Image 1 (tube, rainbow, N blue to C red):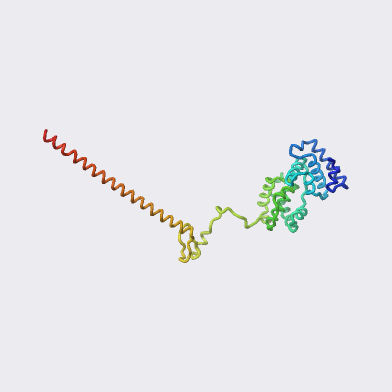
Image 2 (image 1 turned 60 degrees about the vertical axis):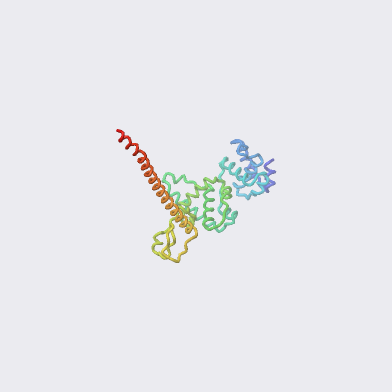
Length: 288
């Protein structure tokens, strides 16, 4: 299918400069690598080249119509787009305002700009002087992560996977920038009430000791308050422990009795054997 026909179906028939740019990108694809290796067909390749060209001229592109025309699912199209874009070395500029409109979070725009600027300053300050000039924040992953963290802080729901696809990055790179941004700008992006591992949470025992009347039942011991009700679980636990101790004592006492009886039987048997041997000895002494 010709590029001009595809552009016409996507509403780009009057943008000849975009068609020329897309044709140039498609020729570059054909020269550098075989797109079928990454699962991108000729029609899909032409559509993706048109989208990249439209983005470079900041022209609105209907991705849903492009996905339908490519005959692929949305997820497969996004994956193919990211693969082709990264292979060509084309960098997409991710605008914060466009993200806000797309995800319905326009009020986050000033917070994202402020947090992103603060992160850049702190990140550059943490680098050695020889590496500061080479710091590159043009990749869209930084904008995407800042937008996601601001949405999370303001308790707004944003689809993380969709944001990763829009930014054209990988999940591992997204998570790496997320961790870096959280460490350097916790005062801007951090969330104070985050879920913690229950095994890491320890009770404040000093505070419990200050107010003994409020002390709860802990580790199977009673509280200092007589009115405190014992939970059913701990009741069963204590009853089980008591039953076990009773059983243990009965088994030990039974073993002691059995040992004593065995000792008595052995003593009686020894006496009987001695009495049987005694007459034989006296008769032999008399004969001698």
